[in-house]
Amino acid sequence: MDLQIKSFEDYQNTYQHSVENPEAFWAGIAENFYWRRKWNNVLDWNFKEPKIKWFEGAKLNITENCLDRHIYQHGDTPAIIWEPNDPNEAHRVLTYKQLLDKVEQFSNVLKNNGVRKGDRICIYLPMVPELVIAVLACARIGAIHSVVFGGFSAQSIADRINDADCRLVITSDGGFRGTKDIELKSIVDDALVQCKSVERVIVLTRTRTPVSMIKGRDVWWEDEIKKVETQGNPPCPAEEMDAEDMLFVLYTSGSTGKPKGVVHTCGGYMVYTGYTFTNAFQYQPGEVYFCTADIGWITGHSYIVYGPLSQGATSLMFEGIPTWPDAGRLWDIVEKHHVNILYTAPTAIRSLMAAGDSYVDGKNLSSITKLGTVGEPINEEAWHWYDQKIGHGKAPIVDTWWQTETGGFLISPIAGVTPTVPGYAMLPLPGVQPILVDENGKEITGNDVSGNLCIKFPWPGMLRTTYGDHERCRQTYFSAYENLYFTGDGCLRDENGYYRITGRVDDVLNVSGHRIGTAEVENAINMHSDVIESAVVGYPHAVKGQGIYAFVIASQHHTDEELTRLDINKTVSRIIGAIAKPDKIQFVSGLPKTRSGKIMRRILRKIAEGDTSNLGDTTTLLDPGVVDEIKEGAEKLRG
Picture 1 (tube, rainbow, N blue to C red):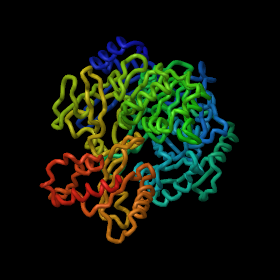
Picture 2: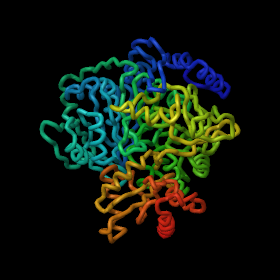
Picture 3: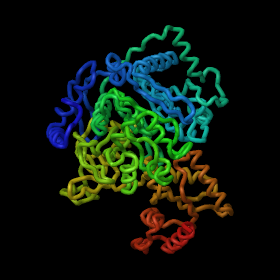
Picture 4: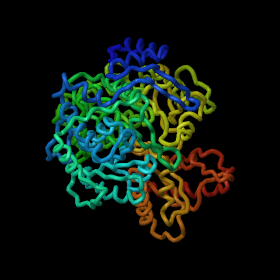
């Protein structure tokens, strides 16, 4: 079966086949990949336990699909183009052959340091090519990688290391992000005070920041590479993996305080990311594809590393931020590397739009043929700016909807094939069966309707469990509605049957395209010595999409409100990371609670949004008077 859909009629026929006979459909797609041994059974599943197994009995190694199989015909094709933070530093290009050599080399480094199949490895690196090398080296020898975003705190790293029981950490002396130098090794050192399982830390040189190296635990990446070179750089054959063997754990925020480790497995994830990448972007050989995400998030896993490389694509990765040294940086990169496909977040688009057109005008963006957005629905104004200013009205915009848990795109336009409407994810990709339900789980049929978005049939890229806690997986995703995967998102389906995501319906915020649990932020705020209690909600933010608004009851000790706000933000940064800092902190004497003690976040959300015209019935609250006080305080804070 051909991987790529060519026309809208082709899409309709393919989609029909995929839902009428999903097993035959996915078996046909899987034939486009290299397997050491084919499957005995395409799919075994139920959503009750849940149990999901794709391509049972198949043997493979995902790195053979991402690297080895491209070597003979495309060995000299660039696999990774790396653009550094500082535009004055030279960029790097790794061909498929060079990338394979470096992955095999570092695989041997891992083996020399005692890593074996099934071990969990924490990776905390900046956006440098060595991050891709480390990820693929883990996959090559059957180790399970857990990549942690470089903006997370020592406490967040410690939580993730301990949850996955990691034996080894890969980090660097530091990292660059815009004007900031981030002391990654120092943060790791702080984390490891709490981590008994870690036996070895491999440290890459990037910033030449002075670091503490502990004898017997810490080794330099470069020294370990030299050891392999003195051994004659032996090849490292790929470990044979079962299709359902674990590939990686990636932690994501939920509605409780503790992040959950989403588990993806080798076979289904490989097939799904490769298929969705080549279709949504209609990737053609030789095109330069630029995803601006960080590999610390699922977007980087699926659509910088595994999806593009499985298809022999040229994937551009960027160490810096879109606004440094000025707001023209992305457009300079597009011009310099003749980028054909640009995939970025609405937050980035809005911030670049706000900087003004002078940073775009005069830049040669004629190489762009396709555009994409990720992380959150894109607002109409930003969509039109992206379309006109960056795509010059000639590049279709692929507004992708998906999650860490889904592994890849579920609802998305196919570039140049399916229709596009600003702000709409449009239509499900083949094999994806969305359903809208009401609060009782009853299906909402027809068009021009809205409800909670669920999926009624498995797809190969979906999560299998949450690491070490399968019951949490069941409770979070499969318990709300019987025999359905619940996405946690609200959705509308318009009169044409097109889907538009309307936002989270659980206690999870979507800040700059990244999910942050309200409970996680509240727990961090409550760690501050002057805080008695807090409640966190989201509110509309011009750049981030959603901002974090915290209502805080403080002790009588705090006298300087502004200083206490700064202290609280410092506490949140220390416990979670700067990404979770509240944008607004309002001090209150009480919170709107029911007589049973439940905080009415619906009321707080309305106040944070500035919509106090209809707060509903407040007479059932323990202290209705507190609502008026909070409303007054919010108006003062808005100024």
